[in-house]
Length: 536
Image (cartoon, rainbow, N blue to C red; front, top):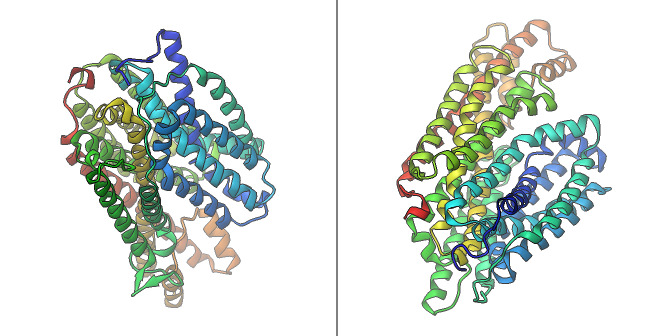
């Protein structure tokens, strides 16, 4: 496509285009967080177990991970706007099916399959449509707003889900999504989509290899909490004494390597691969994708840890927990919109580095704040820092990745970019959860072992019981369990104190690993450009 061709002509038209694309991004991200606070209610309503609903969430994540790269190629084949609109139609059908689902099977079809397929068409198309509708000097701001919309959806998800579960029904969330999709389709007619003039080819072998490779790797990550990262948990599948998680991840890496090798083979034979391996050698693109990975790893880790602290450790409701996350959303949107507007010529590398510093500072401040014993207000300042950091990254990374390749390849980049963010989200959540529970188990056993009030028999039973996995319990939940077990008051009090200390130790350990990931991300910022794309 010709640079600047098809860009939004007027300010009002540009706002409508941006609203359309941001709404699509918001909707895709909302499903990743809105139902986490309503899992038990959904399970009871459709006649299944919590495990069944968690399986549906896992399936939704897997469908997106497996087909995101082919979804970007389909957008290049049939047109980005058409892919966006078809994806919205499929997603809307999935939302309606989910809202009316009488059982788990129908829920899986609507939520996991149809919504997942819709998402793999929509998300890569959003990246390409920003490139096609905004001139180079306006893309950083546009990408920042679209990315901010997705992050805000993740933050608002617990609030929306908590409100629906408390006052309405979880089904209203999906019914509302149908209305939003209808509005997006009406506005999508304004989107410009200029064809590159070359009809792309779908590499079927590459599609299968990439889908199986990424899907197998992500599935292994998603099962890490249940099966154990390396040492298998009791009754968990294993091979040669090693958790199946390791073998799944290794298999995924091998398949991805074969996918890259197959792409290189096609290039040598002058045929078109699903993704040109040469893209992986593009320093600016690989740097931007690496930063996307770390951004979503830290972001989803934070959105796992902080709600646990608020809802379990402090006992807040789902609605109150969502409200406490609003400072992060506000500063994220502010940074994503104001940085490109107020500092249009600033170095992307500098902005990203400052954003990483802000995210690191927020994680460290939150670790320190956990020791104060204050109420829910202690999360406000750390979340402000984390929100500013995430917003700073969002304001630059989309423009960095797409500007690294010709505009006609933006759909391909969109597919890879969303696959990378999906991978970062999965690893961030799994890693934070695993570290948290491992630290919680160790701390709880240490506290119980050192407490003379706890009999030796109880200590041994606790050690054996925790081998199958610890649970992040509130004081009320643990107190109820101890009363049902007939535990005497002295032992019960010791257990409650040990649990309270262990919860904080687990949260601090999870935040520490997220802070470390932020520091590690700083190493890769040298690949980012020092000038805005239009100035290059």
